Amino acid sequence: MGISLEHLGDSLMEAAAKRVRDRLPALAKSKTFARRGLVSPTETKARITRYVEATSRAILPERAAARADITTGQEALIGTNDLLSIEFLEAGLLAARAVGRIEIMGTGLFGTGFLVGDRLLLTNHHVLPAPALAGATVVTFGHEEQKFGTPSVPADFALEPARFWLTDSEHDFTLVALSAQSDLGVSLDSFGWHPLHEEGKILEGHPVAIVQHPQGRPKTIALHNSYFLIVDNASPDDQFCWYSGDTERGSSGSPVFNRDWQVVALHHKAVPRTNSRNEILDKFGKTMSEARYKANPDLVDYVANEGVRASRLRRTIASASLGDPAQAALRDGLIALWDSPKGRSLRARFPAP
View 1 (cartoon, rainbow, N blue to C red):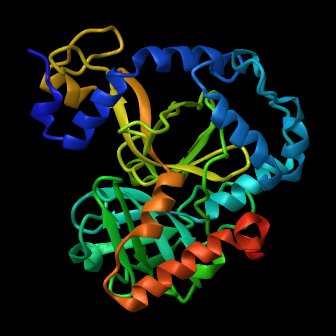
View 2 (cartoon, rainbow, N blue to C red; view 1 turned 120 degrees about the vertical axis):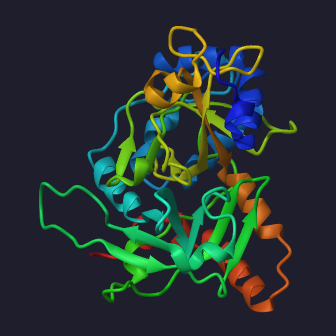
């Protein structure tokens, strides 16, 4: 008897698995085109047009020139230019600074989150579902392997939900304030932040990078064989998107970046392949018993990752009802910050170390 998602009791996983099952043909097609360096024919002309119009907002100037070959005439034949300035690596190091490890002390539970401005951290609702966890939660920045260069000391910050707290289970996010300084006096501002922008940042088939703390380990990045696969506009599930790339437990709450290091999604679930009885399948198409599932989780056939789209998060945060006037003013200031010139420049958001 195979173990089912119902048996695991993970309602988020059940819902995500159903969404993925409904989209398996589109996912398979998009993966095929992505591996050939092409935008999928599942992409819509409207989204392509928005993307082309938005390239003038690209953070790295060299990418705007590289995108000049994009046309909207034949979606199935759109090519991508994978030549990048070496500065791409430097920009990635800057972008990763704002990503931290979330640990709920005494539980063995970890997650990932990232700064989005004004001492505010974004992660998943299922990672931080209630303010009551604040006293037991530590957010660590700079928890990285450092074999080269001058080692830096990880900095631990506390949650301050009384200053700001906004959570939404439907969009699986929590936005919470952090302390201004770490336990050792390091300024939170030194780690920079990422804005959430509207649509026009990525197309199906384009590469993505996922910066994360899997299992609470030092910061890692999923970069190879990682592609933005499909997205629905104007469907009941259009707050979600699907992409490839390796993730593990503890990766929930990670930012999913495009090649300009703009946030395109908040990662929340890796979705396994299931059969008609909702039983989890391994990479050979066989059902997995509970014992085998727990002993060999790497054998699970994960179809795709599911994330919450940055544009939908932005809209939800912007329209949320906040009873505390001080928190409402902080939220309004955050949206204005994202739309400011500083919010459009990667380097301006990351102070020199």
